[in-house]
Image (cartoon, rainbow, N blue to C red; front, top):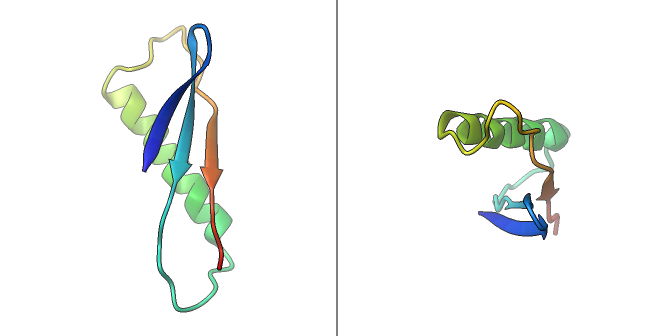
Length: 66
């Protein structure tokens, strides 16, 4: 799930909650999360939610390990 939260008056913070059920520990989970964030950025650019002058918005990925 991705939530977009107003961070400042004209800026957004994207909170990315990834829920996966795995039977074993993935030592490369940080890399997978980085790829997912990159795909989110790519989608924002593709759907023209960013202009050429915009910086990429901050994304707070949350990974829960139980």
